[in-house]
Image (cartoon, rainbow, N blue to C red; front, side, top):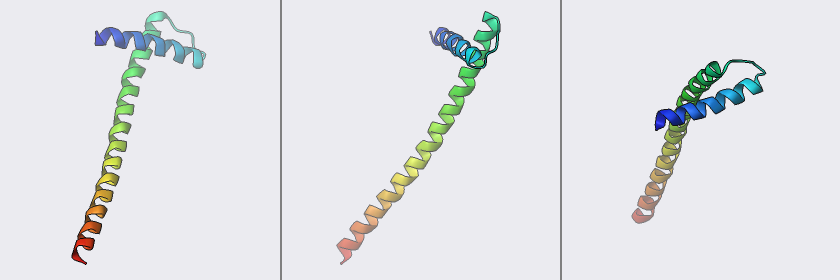
Length: 77
């Protein structure tokens, strides 16, 4: 099922990409371009999400540590 989904998405992506770029290709080439684009784009998006997730995690960790420091300071005084 995932392969069929990839082919369908690839065909649609290839069709749209060839229309946006004003390039004429055969059906097989259009699907192959779309599948390759879907794979490359999917990896790029996952990399960006991981990177942004790591940054968000770091921000959350710093904020959490600041709260802990604030609580410790309040308990000491």
